[in-house]
Image 1 (cartoon, rainbow, N blue to C red):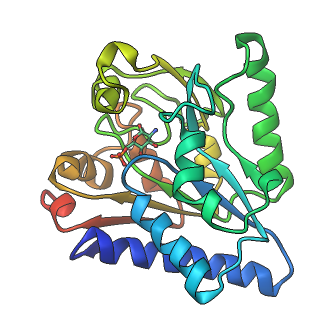
Image 2 (cartoon, rainbow, N blue to C red; image 1 turned 60 degrees about the vertical axis):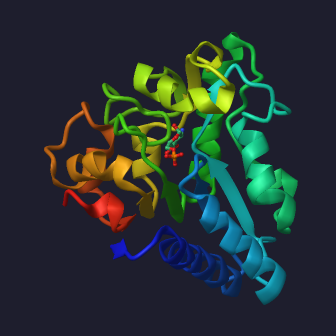
Amino acid sequence: RVFESDVVASIAVAEQMASVIKEKQSQNKMAVLGLATGSSPIKVYRELVRMHQEDGLSFANVVSFNLDEYYPMRKTSDQSYYYFMHQHLFDHVDIKSENINIPDGELTIDAIDHYCRTYEQKIDELGGIDLQLLGIGRTGHIGFNEPGSYFESKTRLVKLDPLTIQDAASDFGREELVPTRAITMGIQSIFKAKKVILMAWGEKKAPIIKRTVEGIISEAVPATFLQKHLDVEVVVDENASLQL
Ligand code: GLP
């Protein structure tokens, strides 16, 4: 879906999320949301906060699972995705803190495997993710599933691609300060979501959007795996759609 701007598109995405939350509320069930970080979802979160403050949208029945976190990463660091999510969404809505799940960048290395398996299990026990939000990196990564990630991949510790590290440099001051690893949900973990919305704004994303939507499905561009998903929406502004 091509929108005239990221603002209009973000409102449309927030509306879809709100309708999942409300539908689940009416059934007395939890809404399980898969959430993303990066600049792309910021306006979606802003609209959700507005809906909470002005329209009374409640997040009391929301369980969230974030896609990824740098490793190692302290929660209190302002580059952490933990910090990002609280700053942009969680601190402003009535989600219960025990319902927030974000991969833990503070674990010791030995604890990661077990933690990742538990993360997957928690999602499965809740009946899977109802709606998964995604941004996309210029490498074609979703979450931090860089080129070479298998379709079957699950939540795990990964190494970041040099281009991803370069793109994150401005957040960390310089490239050498960007963590080289991250914990990310896998392609399969993402793929199991009932509905997926991938967002991209701006001309910088136009080449990777073309490859994602029209390219052959391959590990070289992990986002292409989404072509096989039964309910996926690619939401772009005009600039990101330029090469389609
Ligand atoms: C990071 C995140 C991804 C995100 C990507 C794009 O690498 N791990 O989940 O999609 O950045 O970020 P942006 O939305 O800022 O372009």
